[in-house]
Image (cartoon, rainbow, N blue to C red; front, side, top):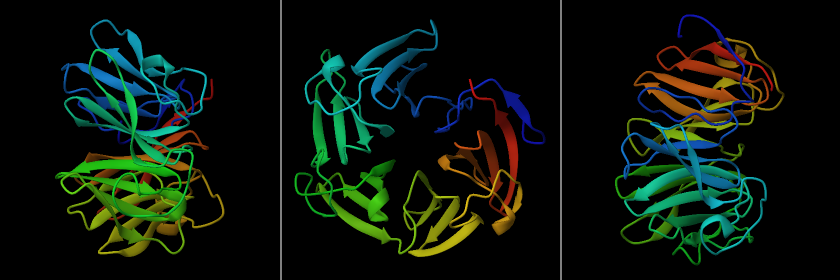
Length: 276
């Protein structure tokens, strides 16, 4: 609820993805609606991808392994990932995965056999190079946004937002931060505006100008509600829109879910989670 605090028996919140109705995840990294099967969802942990039936509440492993992390390019449950931090349905027949520790974007086909292949970057090799997918290099790709025939990526350790044009298949840098490693993000009113989780707060980027909105730049200070630098965050890791004027943030290390009203940048805790 918005005007109060809820307490839940959940594991530490990591990512939150807007759905209808709103769901917030706990130990899973991403929940993304599967357009191929209305009412069902695609769910990803750090190392595996599942399909979730909302009718039966059954989860079926479709790619990766529920325990083993690493790197393996093959198909289905023989695939290995190392820290899936974002997952989007790129088209009707493929999923696009941000594989953070493997430093690449990987695609998983959605046919009878879930084939995995590198979509951009060079898995297990880090760098900072724009260009065609095979030439591009990332260092900790984190968040993904699909917008108007382009994929936007937070290249965390390179402190950049990059754009992969799906028409030309060229990756380019659209923003470079001098100070912050960039985490999860959402787009604002245009591709020139982003709200990004950083070390201990939330950053607003507009026309390549950065404003540190809420939280602190260096020292953990939380959890505490309020406005601007008076707010304490410790490990904000997931962000999504609740409505057109409210952001929802999962703050991992303090085990809270927070809302940010963007008209006055007021932050309030709506869920305090217990460790399980």
